[in-house]
Length: 167
Image (cartoon, rainbow, N blue to C red; front, side):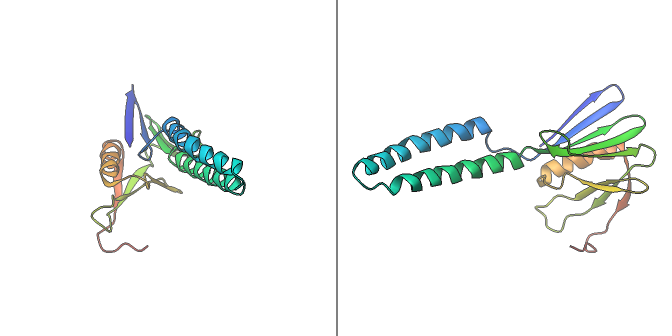
């Protein structure tokens, strides 16, 4: 998902993975699954089959941990701020963990075409000393919209030919 907002001379682009569900919806699904599962486990425990209860708890704990991990991974985002004199890139989950700053006149966009028609092009913002890949988790349509936004703001100085890409 790519969102952009312009305020004056500053453009802020936020790229993040598509969410299939929110954490609130995941908690509701966990609750709906937990009630019958624990009710059955408690019923079997009352009948004397007590080993069922720890396995039901372990199953629900594993499902909760998995859903939480997936939700955490989907909170990852790239925030690209293009102002008059600089290009800043922040990456992280919930809050920025890594930060890059390029002078606007030195910053450029590198585009590497996709290997497969379903993939999007690989995009990197680079300056005189550093290069940062942006939007590597986006689907094709979102990657192309990010490319369109960045092309309006930055020069494309590097465009790799198709077929010369090495993994």
